[in-house]
Structures are given as structure tokens and as C-alpha cells.
Image 1: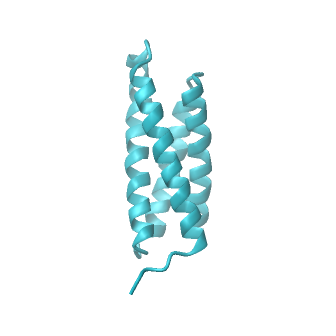
Image 2: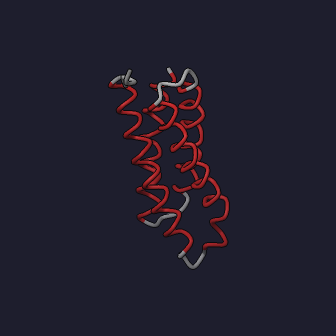
Length: 112
């Protein structure tokens, strides 16, 4: 029997996938910036954000009983990632911060 995904789940899954992609792109760009050494904490947070978004998508996709808890943690990490990215004025960091905040909002609703 197929797992049915609610519209709320589906919107959150899409937000997490968009966030994961933005974070991967930002991470790659940050590693190539001349001040990459100063971005260590940001880069580590980007990695955490990528991983938690992927895990949240998996939990929601299988309608796990723990999906809401995963989304709550995901929202926290996305907000932290946005805060770190906002410290840097590069367009990739600013865009990533925006996408992370949007994802956090969807995840908060999901965790409700």
C-alpha cells in the first residue's frame, strides 16, 4: 500500500530539497572564497543543514512517526545556518540565508 503524503508534508519536503540545494551551492562557493578560513563555522553549519534537510525529507516521505521531531530540529538548524550565512555579503550566502529561513518556516509549521 503506497504511503500518502499530505500537502503540508509535500510543501515541507519541497522546501527542504530547495534548502539542501542552496546549502550545497553556498558551501561549494564558500570553499572557493579567499576568506574560506574565516567561514569555518558557517561551512560546518551548512553541512549540518544539508544533512538534516535530507534526513527530514526521508522521514516525511515515509510518513515516519518521528517526522515532526525531525522537522523541529531541521527548523532550528536552518535558522542557525541562515544566521551564519547572513554574516557574509556574497550573493550565494544571502540567497542561502533566505532559503534557509523559508525552510525553517515550513518545518516549524510541520512540527506544529
